[in-house]
Image (cartoon, rainbow, N blue to C red; front, side, top):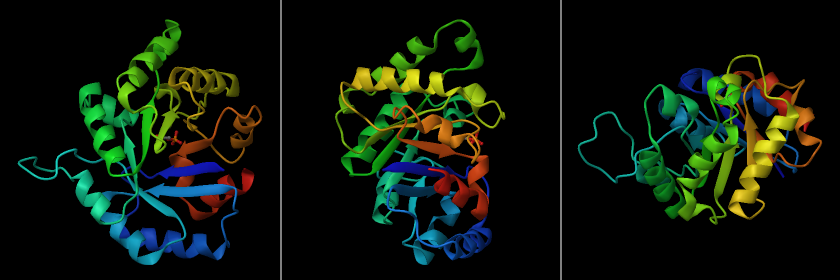
Length: 235
Ligand code: PGA
């Protein structure tokens, strides 16, 4: 089973979600070897839930408390109650733009897994860390910070080098394999590893050759129905 996950970031409103779904569904059933999931904005979750059982739906973020004085936040508990069964945690934009640190990400992972949600924990090095040869150290730190949860079968790790995201400069398949093998070894099991960072329908199959990558987290190329479907067809 290959996971194809679309991270829509702050794109598409409820209306454009519906036209995406209409067109996407016209391309027919998703092949059985693919698990497709889309992470739309919070405001579009409802539009998806009402319209489709066709694609899994996830939230891009969530707060670990049930409720309280946390202006602007959305509780993971409420998301789960809405029937959202996937959560992204620690995307590079959350870490680097919004300053989310390991201690916070750990709480999100803990709550999400405790609710039985498929939890996609993102890791990856910056370009400077890569140039300094620190990729493995960075991954070790990021994965180690959730070490209590590495056995959970709903945990998925997404390796997304920060420099590859939205840059048109994807990591080479060898680098993705190396990161995957590091994470699988660290977890002492065949934990699903996604690769993300400038994936498109032309380069996606390069990452599948070695069998080390179990799926993809895709931004830009997941936004149009034809392009999202091409990614699915390419695997
Ligand atoms: P990209 O984004 O595919 O546009 O590089 C990936 C991501 O941010 O998850």
